[in-house]
Every structure is written in C-alpha cells, then in structure tokens.
Image (cartoon, rainbow, N blue to C red):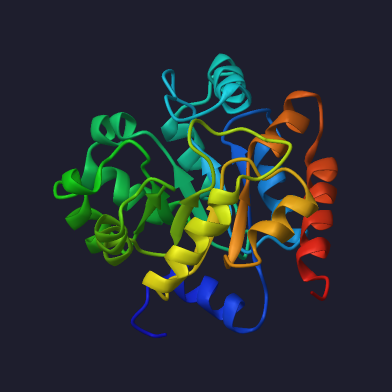
Length: 262
C-alpha cells in the first residue's frame, strides 16, 4: 500500500483486518472543547474522523447540522481557526474535512491544500463540487497528497457511478437517502442497493452516510458496505449539551455494535 494516499491506506488496512469502518463527525469550532471531541472519537475507536467546516449556506445539510454550523459561526468559528487548531491534534487516525467549495475557492486551492496537509488532514469532501468541475481543484490536492472523496447517491446511473469511483480517493461516500443529512428512524432499502452497486464497481472502501443514528442502523448499513459515517445524531447530542466524554461514549457504543459477530 506504499503508493496509496494515507487515508485510503489506513482504511484499507482496517477493512482488510476484518473491521467495519466507523467515521464520526464533528462540526469544527462548535464549543471551545471541540478539539477534545476529536480526541474522544479517536480514543473510542473511530477509524477516521470527519470535521465539518461551518458555512452560512449549507445546502446539503439537514436541520441539525445547519443548527450546529450556525452555532459554531456565532461562536467565531472559521476555516483558518479550525485548521490552526487541528495542527495541535494528534488523533492517530485520519482526519477528513467536509467543506463547501466556496470556502476553499476563497482561501485559494493551493493554499488550502497545503494548509490542510499541514493541519494533519488526510482528505476532503466537497459535496457541492461536481465531478465535471474537479479540474481546477484536483491538481492542487494531488500535489499536496490530499484525498478528494466523491459522493454517490441512489440515483447515480451505473456509467456515472463507475466514473465517480474511478475519480474518488480515500473512500467512496455512499449517500443512503435522497435529500439532506439527518438522522432517520429507519434506513431506506436504497442504502443496501447502493452499497451493493458500489462494492461491485470499486475496491475502494465504501462508507455510507446520511441517516445513520443507532447501532442497528450501523449494522444494517454495513451488511454490504465497509463502514458508516455518523453525523447528525452526534451533533444533536452536542447541541443538547453533550461534552467530549459523552460523545466518545456514544462512538464507543457504535464501535462495539459494529464489532459484534454477525
């Protein structure tokens, strides 16, 4: 795996050793102790950690992540401050930034990529940057050694799915449900169908997100997929007052559930 970017190498190693992958999310800058949340996730058994950059117009995010983003912005969070704080975090697992491309564009692609790597970031998710428009961003990411993760939805046609998988780095982000992010009571059947399609298309780790809130959701999603991203459920707890220890305990519960024999 010497030629692989660090994010993919780590996730492949974990998958190949028999683990289902767990990627919890935290909104960067949400609370003065948000960096401790990152450390708590890692200590609880996260395989990678997704860090959301607060944005004023988060079009793909549901009400919980929007509320978390607004709260973080009200507390003074911004891209530069979040990257600076990440420089002091030695989580021991890959960190993946989720940001809207407008923030990255205004920072400057070359500058953002270099600063992300300097801040211990291994990958980025830019949900509003279509595959056809990767051209300006991708060279700077590749030069810096930063993986750019692509998203696929249940409506993605087979031909496009293959191209998305070919362009994705680190892992492929499977969107369980149509619409915005947010915890749901049940996972849609389309989640299993999409995971099966992705696994038939690529050997990249396939990690499913959107709507995963419980151990039962995580186990159901990973019947076919390699792992799950858990976001809104954790940020609901955070907004309701949960601290790093509480959130770490929830991630540890998810970890234990994924590790149970099937």
